[in-house]
Amino acid sequence: MSDASKGTGSKRAMVEDTAEAREAALREALELQRGRPAWQRALWAAGGISFVVVGAVGIVVPGLPTTPMLLLAAACFARSSPRLYEWLLRNKTFGPLIDDYRAGRGVSMGVKVTAISMMTVFVAFALLVPLRAKPLPAVMVLCLALFGAYYVARLPTRRRQ
Image (cartoon, rainbow, N blue to C red; front, top):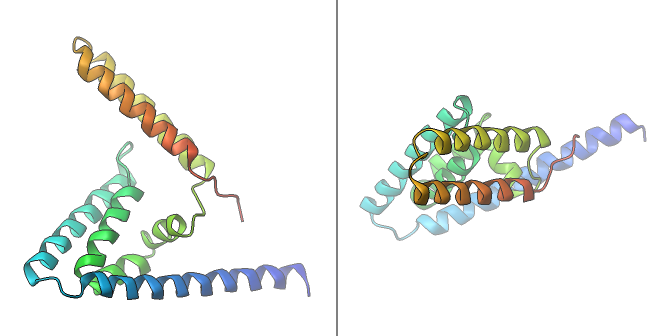
């Protein structure tokens, strides 16, 4: 078997694994949604839509997290609407981010560098301008930023395929 066909086979297996994982996720979503009153499902759906909007804005606005918002949206949709949950998982823009996280593939080094760099810039601005004379909020922001940077740095790094 040639190397090219091995690569194609592994890609096909990855797609099949992803499809199986999505089917399992949809079954879980149906279980989470079952038995909830309509008003609760509507609130969960509204929360999910809100998180998708914030996540979409995060794609173009530096410093605004995208993947965590989409993960929250997925959790909300799993509790409200299997149709919305399936839409999110199959979305060409958002689906791969959720798939990568759920499969434990991690994030690329570029994403880590960008995230930590943007956190550094925004936190430095906050500490030097609006929080300059407010030591308690400044320490809180700095501690949260350090925790966030530590978390991002500890995420598994995805290797190029």
